[in-house]
Amino acid sequence: MPKNVSKSNAKKARPAEGLSICLAAELRAESARRGITQTQIAVALNRSNAYINERWHGYAALTVDELALWCAVLEMEPAGIVLAAQASKIR
Image (cartoon, rainbow, N blue to C red):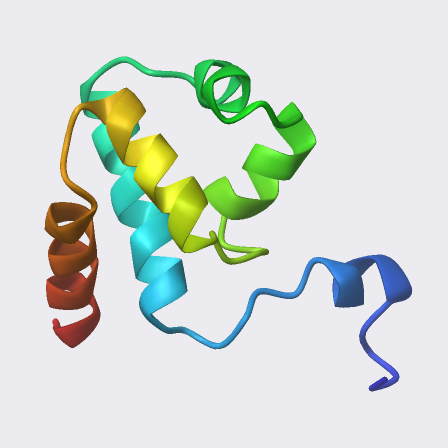
């Protein structure tokens, strides 16, 4: 571990900028537009708030099943959010 990175920061280091980061951003934005909170997502996915928070901010990637459930809560198709994330990655 580099000297300037503490253990707590190392655990919270985001993965390389990629589709999972863009997907997290799109899910946050869409959740906000629909007025759906992290807590509501956590309940729907039967996960803790901490677990959802890690995915909400891109510290951990979503599984495909989690993405499908999250999108069901948002009443949208997973393909739509993935395409939006991919488009934002290209910009």
